[in-house]
Image 1 (cartoon, helix red, strand yellow):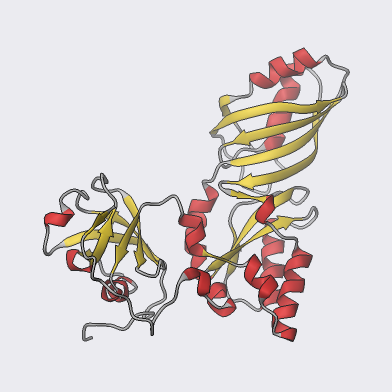
Image 2: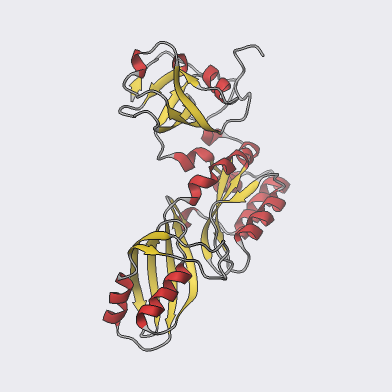
Length: 318
């Protein structure tokens, strides 16, 4: 990290550290990791949660078919602008497959290996998404338990992989029908079931906060949107720059406090305040190595503004 202004300060009267946000603020730009139950669609689950908590904006990041369970991110307010990033996360699944004939373990393992790597993956007609042909990367397809006809399998794959299709294709290789009996998603990107809560736990936490004034449970469930962007290089900026960027302005050199090293033109970065608040995702218009030598000019252009307008006061006239 290159420090460009070690005397920069932030106003205690505006903004706040992400971990210090109120419940109301987290509803404006936070997310929930839900352990989806079997039955409802992802859309139904997000609609129920939205109505229960009285939110205007709450969407889901990724789709689980109605019968499937597991990690389903719910994004609130400005966090919904990050839906596209969540959709590209690699996924893991636990799948129970029922094979239509008795089979030996070596034969099953051999044919499962043929379905790893880059494979064609076409969704079945009953999928929750539109049917289209595409390839997907399957990095792991392994057996955890097997009794001759039922296999508990572990899958690690690229986003958008259809496990029903994998079951169908395995059946074609085995010359026997293979049925997907159960499907559970333990992880999506860096998020796992360890961090997820059930719909009932969410409802209880919301009731405790709303009816009893106890926010401990809901604060453990709501996460600041910055937690979704921990893998993005960060440029720290001054309060005045944050105010301008929240209105879509580019980042100028005088507003920079510190920058990562060795980033090229076009690199995506997260612009954050001195308090650590996400202001915008942006692309560098200058390589980071030349920015310390600049005194004026554009450093980065935002592609996704995440901070509410006027969180920090304007330093310019309309």
